[in-house]
Length: 430
Image (cartoon, rainbow, N blue to C red; front, side):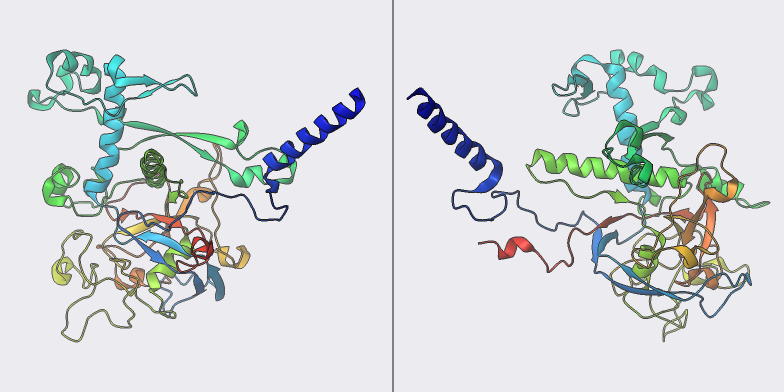
């Protein structure tokens, strides 16, 4: 009798266990139910670029006589991209976030909260910082230059302290055969980063010998007159850190609203950038199509150096506002001219020969002691100080990832989750 009782109880518990594992009451394979609803929502300022095929290779010109590019067809998955370069005012939001986070930590107590999960303190962003409070000014004094270092006695922020600590996961390292069986989130695959986020404002003087550019050095990044101009003087690592911060900022907002996280916002890889720059046109020399640099009325179509010593002929002088000129057919502004833009791709003269034809990319993060050649990153699009050749969508150039220039900025992209913006599986769920 007792044996029969235990058999019945065991059978009953087994049924409960099976049901709790997602088997479903009907015994049918129906998948896990009540999954979070997912909608394709573009971050503010980003435009959807559908998946497609890109034909890369040599353009009609080769001013460097490198003859290093080869024709190749590659496929690029769908993604979102900023419709303009990141502006001074947008990047200043990042700088101010880092500044405020340091201030919150210095003020302590009410400005910090304990995370019950991790057991660590985090910033209480709901608490406002009163920068004019006398007690707060004493606590925040380490953020400013000493009185002896102040210019004309003016209280100035020590921007060398505006350091942003971040982390990223090295999936390529985790995917190596020797690491098989280890989770990609394992400690050895989580890499730390620390970067000073303030842009190099001295680039305007450093880039041009015997040239008076002190006015833009003094005002370009902070003055409201340049709020909507592209940020310059940022390294490749600063651009990458901006994308990591922006991802964190948006995902935190979505989490508080009970919404599911999005994929990383990042610096675009080279093929992705060129595909977007062409605007859906087949091997167009410029982002607007071409082959001419002026429209039918004789107006120049981008901000570059149209003539020897004649910078203002295109309507600009240095950079121009991010929404200047007409966008390409995807709605992206200044993919040719204004500022050249960082990509995530490591520059190699022969990379077209060995990279895959699926989302083609070669991205190497240099280690200490690596040769300088491995620190080169591809820049695209040409700038306000370049001749027309560098504006062509197929022209490749590079700069060292730790360098800053008055003619290099960036914009961000984010991979699209799914095949097409019209391909929403939620619409087919009863």
